[in-house]
Length: 207
Image (cartoon, rainbow, N blue to C red):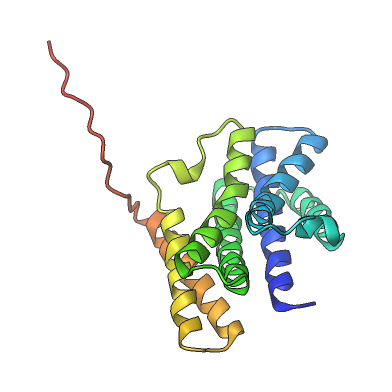
């Protein structure tokens, strides 16, 4: 099993738990929980593979991903009492998921000889798309479309990956550093409520 596959599997598990937590918060039944977990965990990887012309997509060729989704979903349901702080747990697993998928996406983009900027975009889209699908299906405004620092964290991680790759540092070290960069931006952004500036201002009300 190569290093990218390991990262993909870890990201799949994190996003599956994230999907389960969101679905349980919406009081869905067992089928709904499993569907949300699956869509959240493989949505980004599916988009990534389709964009680079890799079909069938990765999870269709390796049943490991299906098993990981099922096991992660069962674990999340069984330990729901330990994960009772749903918002905090959702945030944690979602952050881990985007960190892992960002690094995997950038690495795959480089392997496909894409331009560095396209590699960053590929990593960012693959990291965010599963969460977008999860939120839409759960009738929530996707996090990426709010003022929260989300895609920006992925872009930061992608830049770190490219810089370290250019310096020819070991792939494992590069992946870990880029993933930590995503987490290091995302967590303080939520704690300290950092926001991107808005380009729109509501006009003052006239009386």
